[in-house]
Length: 191
View 1 (cartoon, rainbow, N blue to C red):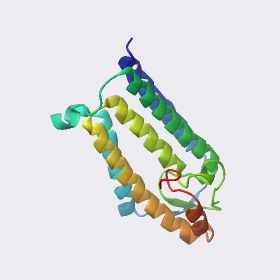
View 2 (tube, one colour):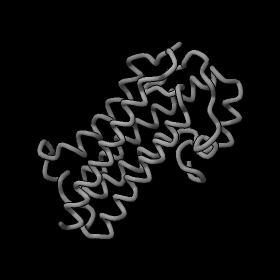
View 3 (cartoon, rainbow, N blue to C red):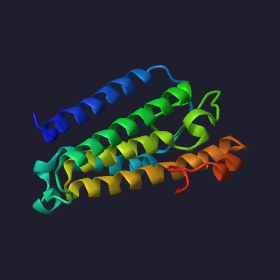
């Protein structure tokens, strides 16, 4: 088995394990007190769905998007697997730490708590950071222009969701502005 073919098995297996954990973890969350409007929800869901389609459905894409942008090779495959594993692990750590306050959409839960410990002491949105790292790793393994476009779509979706989420957190928690000023949104020392 080559590194390319093992990567094509390892990365999907990591994503499937993450998805199974995510579904189980979503069962026990606090009741919702406020939910983001559907129009706003669409502005981050649609780019993320486009990202997923670009990364998983190459047969529907024009040849320019399936042209290689990165050379295939063992170091790239190892690095891509590492990005996926670290990214998904970060998102799981953050999800576990967030506990019952978690929601897949922007919501305010009953008895919502502002979590500022664990990964949230370093990054305000570690789930999005982890998912971006995992998506970058997936795109690197694919090595085609569709991966670059997919990462761009995911970034647009996450940046919109961050904007909506932070607006709501500032209204919900008086201490949020101070937390925001002292903690990076996605990547420490960058953003």
